[in-house]
Length: 208
Image (cartoon, rainbow, N blue to C red; front, top):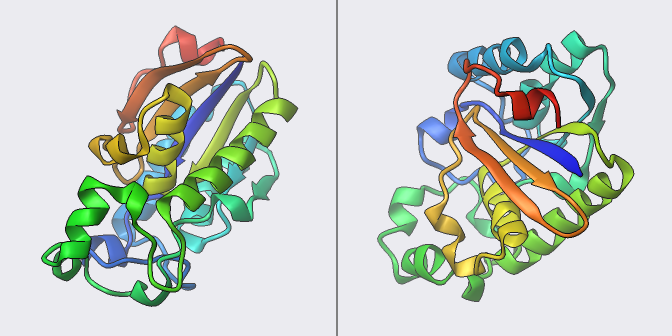
């Protein structure tokens, strides 16, 4: 059984302005996001974590770096953990999109949607789950940190819990939050969802 600490990156300007970042480069944590990264480190750095993975996008790397340094572990970057490729919609406002019919499709039936010039939610779920499966296979019985993005985290949770993809938007994954998922050959258990550091460490996280 592998225990995954699924961590969403911290706050950044695109989050504050409610804009779609997609794969755009140069999106860095703001002052609140950097504080969240420190709080994640201070909360988790006494755990027996064996490996730290992150999306290669700057906001995820900057969130993962303090914890990796404290643990004296190499930070492993995984391109398949990147955020949604939103294609030509990168940089556009969610507020404006949600006023359109397509915005309603994204929220109500995301399985039927593909971003113009980008990915579908189905494609994102498939690539993220395939990468997490590879991590789980290699790190059996270990405590593993994976720092990436809100929708990919929610899509992964929906897959492992057997939820329909169209229900994944019901999950909440806040910036700088920690979600704990335990995976075995036969079952998946969601031990915690959207924990906001600092928080006390339960025994089932300390001893996976």
